[in-house]
Every structure is written in C-alpha cells, then in structure tokens.
Length: 140
Image (cartoon, rainbow, N blue to C red):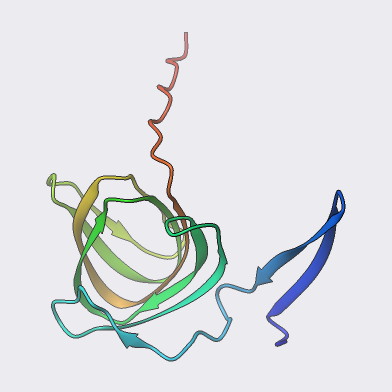
C-alpha cells in the first residue's frame, strides 16, 4: 500500500468494515483510457474507492483537455474539483466555470457538455437514488 493510501478497520456489530482513504490530489491513478463520449479523443483515468451497486460509488477521476458529453440518467453526481479548469454547459442553457475548490452537483436527469481547458482532477460521489431537494426556507 502506498503512503497515499491507508485502510483501517472499524468494528460494526459482528462484522468488520474497512475504512477507505486516499490523498485524492496526489494518489496515483490507473493507466488512462479513451473517454467513450469524447468529441476530441480525450483520455481519462478513474480510481474507484467504493461502490454500492451499479449507480452508487465514489472515487477520483482525471481527464485531459478537450470536450465530451455527459448524461446523468441513472444517478446524481456530486464532485469537488481538486485541480485544473473546465466549463460545463447544461443542455438547458446554463454554464459554469470550474476550478480548484469548485463543488458541483449534476442532478439525476442532467445532460450537457464538459469543455476541459487544463487537465482536471476531481473527487466524485455518484448517488443512484433519485431525490428531490427540500426547498430552502426563506429567512424571516
């Protein structure tokens, strides 16, 4: 196990469950692969840290500059940008510029395009259950 990774055990009832941890900004990622939805031939790499079914997982992802389409039909994605820059354009006409420190939510049903300007690295959480956000109460 590298210095960037550590597994610790936590006792839950009678079963042992392992905690998962990496230093997301420096952990070595697997060999990059072609991004299937790339319009420009990009390569991407994903380190899955934990999975709980086909549409619920978390990990670290990195992708080189270029453009690709994205569809969130089966899950909501929450991601924290660690490095790099990108612009994300929703098919609904919204756009947002991302840089280190950005926190982004792509709700289930979201569709759009990512334009990566500088190699981007993010942590992500994919949540398979479709949930509607609770309305935020207005302050009195």
